[in-house]
Length: 362
Image (cartoon, rainbow, N blue to C red; front, side, top):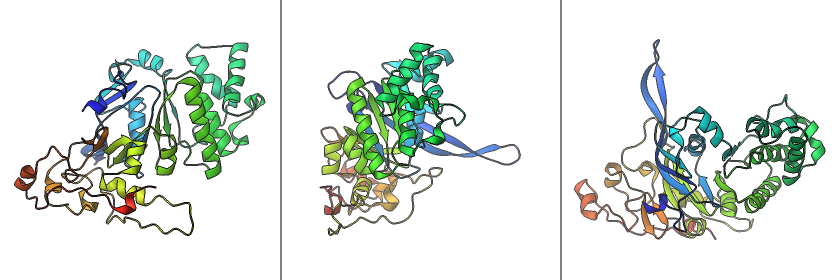
């Protein structure tokens, strides 16, 4: 589809992912024979335009983090294509991949475990400069001081250790480390989920300021839809290893079309304590990624009134319902899966537009 092939202004995207899969083998027995596989990322395609922030949301275990780490090849993909500035990331050898690390960085979710407790803050931030031979000696010291100031920390903190800082300050150190090599693309892996709400706002504002100053491109992974609404240009919703909806942030929050997205938005709390909001309660549990349901992966929990047997037999394509708005559902019109095709496999309810009031995010 065209939305995954080119940027919003028609220029080639900075990052392009096509049919990406990542499976983890399930082994049993004395000889560790493979008996199955966990499909953590299952045929995912998208692009990220230069200077854009792509938000990726979904429940825990849906494949958000695995997708981000696979793009950076911190995890090796099972299949699919990953391109960065038209370079095939999967084809790169060890030396070329290390050079690419300068352009693609990550901010980890846990600011405690992602920082070496035996290293000073200065040594942590300086490490990337040393590896990529960007600065040494006094020049490296000056660069470390500059980076700490950019993320809102004092230069003298360079001599301290990670345990001497709060969670928000540790995350700022992680951001400084990512910025040290002057990257073009940063995977922000739930960078504020472990922080207090007041600190979350500070870190998000910092990320936005840094994006404007350095022309950065973000893939922002989160499970908090309110956070993503604030920072993202486009949003991809993941469920059981698949992208089930992809749209601009304005379109997705105003008119969510995938029933799963509708349920997520209905759960976003309202700031007014006197206001009572109706919620869409999903039945059952998330199926195992080792044995995903046939057809639409969401059909066992779907609340669409037109859901029928066709949903269990046909794998929905991620198709464009309105300009720039892609949805993984054969019951939301328009769809390339005709009503005749649905009837042939036992469908009894024709596609119909469904947007419950509880899903509308004011």
